[in-house]
Length: 182
Image (cartoon, rainbow, N blue to C red; front, top):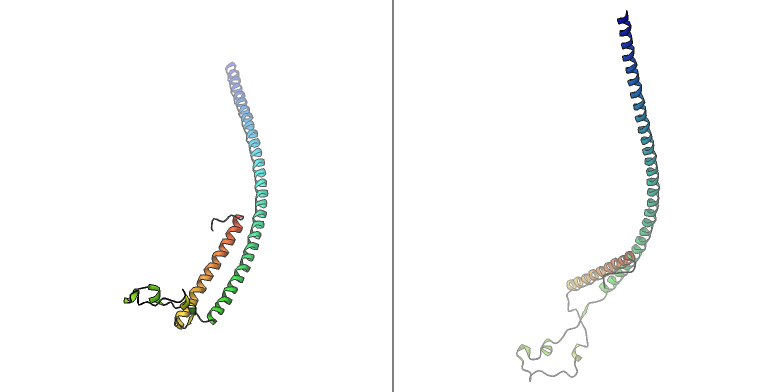
């Protein structure tokens, strides 16, 4: 029976070794779990802190954006009023120009050219006073269609000039008083 007792002792030693190995591995896994749990808890706390910081930054930037948008809207409304006044003035000036006849001064081409047109300089009668013949203005030199085209061109020039002035004023306002344009 000695052999049986020895076999039982060996089996008990082997089982005790398995229990010891199992206990040590369980302790090691428990240590690894605690370390992972600590790291995860620390990381979650950092994520919550970053989320809170991001939320506060977003709120602050949203308030700043809204304030700047309100300022831009105010400036745009003021510029719109200025533009409307300019357009109304241009329309009024256009109506006045269209109602008034277009007057053009007619120059004596042969006198201004001197000896042009086959006339010798001795044949050209000297003017009594320089520009005396230009003092008057002639009406009806342009046809009605030509006068309309001239009035339309003048109107377009004034609209472009007003638009340029408006853009320049807006640009100066945005840049804080510094304009690269003359």
